[in-house]
Length: 177
Image 1 (cartoon, rainbow, N blue to C red):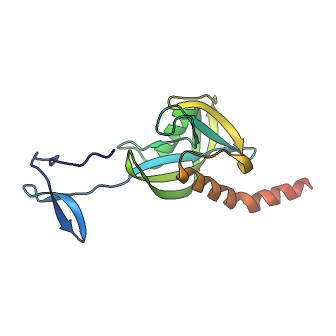
Image 2 (cartoon, rainbow, N blue to C red):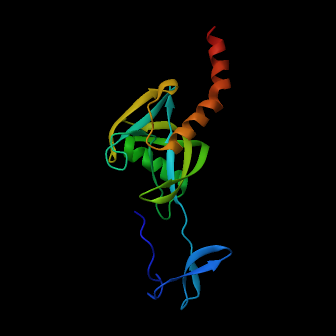
Image 3 (tube, rainbow, N blue to C red):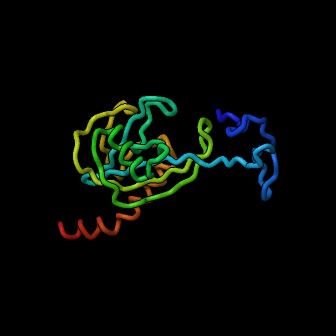
């Protein structure tokens, strides 16, 4: 559950609600400042090997026991690309390199509020595959038969990735004929 701001973080005065540009925001009269609540950035990675996608089985709630892309919140002072690579390493044991941005998706979560999922394709550079800090298990799944994912944003991104590669894979497959 999202906690509502009660006091100004600068001076401690009780905040009020005030209209700014047709949006009701928290406002401190003493400091004469509005407070802006922004979505939390979540970084995700798609790592594919032999047309199989790397997924993580979540160890903790929310969605404990469900599969997702390696994902996590970006930290202050960290680029979203660095967050994606850090989360990949923490959850799967592998070190990756960002290749491309696949998708950006806004969603709402009852625990965290508005989230902004940024999903990258990443290449596996080195490291040993193993379940990390937030992961119960890590496995590769065929792209044409991956399980239900905990986060709709992950499903949207993965489907977009698959769609973007179809023509390329058809060309590669034609060489085998």
